[in-house]
Amino acid sequence: MSHREDAFEVLETYTPDDAGADEGEATRREAGEAESSRASRSWWDRNADEYQSEHGAFLGDDRFVWGPEGLDEAEAGLLGPAESLKGLDVLEIGAGAAQCSRWLAAQGARPVALDLSHRQLQHALRIDGRVPLDGVSLVQADAGKLPFRDGSFDLACSAYGAVPFVADPVEVFREVRRVLRPGGRWVFSVTHPIRWAFPDEPGPEGLSVAASYFDRTPYVEQDDQGRAVYVEHHRTVGDRVRDVVAGGFRLVDLVEPEWPAWNTQEWGGWSPLRGNLIPGTAIFVCVRD
Image 1 (cartoon, rainbow, N blue to C red):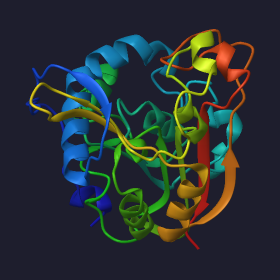
Image 2: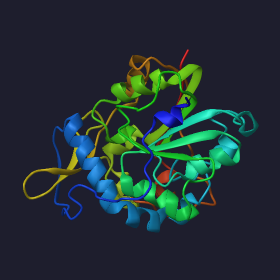
Image 3: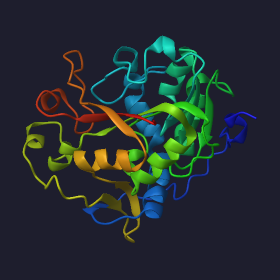
């Protein structure tokens, strides 16, 4: 039995928790794993349509983009040369509409696109307009509890998926290690940790330090009852490296993409102005020895 037969595949129904919840005040406070997971699932279910509408053209239908800078896996080769991906089992975590998995399938890989959000995965079906997707399996699951057998995959990847939103990234890394085969590569991108010291603004106001880089208190948006509706967790660069090691991986590269001249778009706090001065994305390339 393949690992795909072990998985729960998401196809049609859409019933998000708290779908009509209003987003309230922003604060910095502690938020545990259960609260973070619940908030992330509800937030992405509510905002998937707007996110894909706003950023879908940039992400494309079958590109593998590591972050707002536009670094493309086709040229970066962080998972290995494109020709080496054929026949490999690849797990994409926090896949959204599975654009990266679609690119992997086009290289001959056998990708599984996993996301916590049901609505995000439905956009993968919208893009293709058919069920099942050609060469891609869709799975709704929590990154900290992967529904796969040990050693099911050759590679794992995540482009801004899951890792920034979990309270315990080591738990996620250990799960990724468990489902990878020996020698498997785990590559993930996150907001560059230095960005937490600056306001999340694309203009000049976003170039002055406004908070301590060493403050690990999560960023939380909460409703009128104090329930988290969005949670994001900060780690320093050193924290990320230690988490990778504690998860059982060897770090082989840390990529900080520079802002390319062709990219003139603003995306949240990312912009050409800031991107030419400070890094916006960090990509960790890890190996399961």
